[in-house]
Length: 153
Image 1 (cartoon, rainbow, N blue to C red):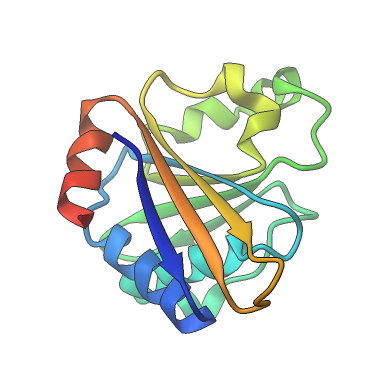
Image 2 (cartoon, rainbow, N blue to C red; image 1 turned 135 degrees about the vertical axis):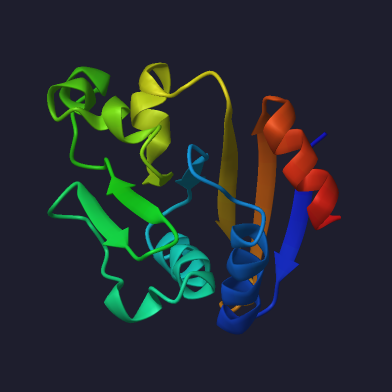
């Protein structure tokens, strides 16, 4: 039950992130994969903007995790690109964040064995012919994320 969204612009990607965010709650885990420059951080900005946190966004490339907090939700934005494997994720206590808020994990394929059994995998693919276009593929792991996809359709 995968779902695919075609984004024709940065604005489309931001708006789709906002739409997804409206369905998220504490304990949700979203993984993002895609080559450098595919739009993972831009998609995250869309999620953050739904919670009025977008003014604070920065790519967590050098810090592993950025925390965004307001009175409604905690969002933990991970970039695990620089980790060797999931053992380093466990060493920083990464799995302890899963129940504390919404977790967004870029490059999650590097720590797949550390992910909870249920999460939403999102792949962002650049279009070779149109630099503004992205294909955003959602793959649910667990009934909660199947329900989210049903609401997005």
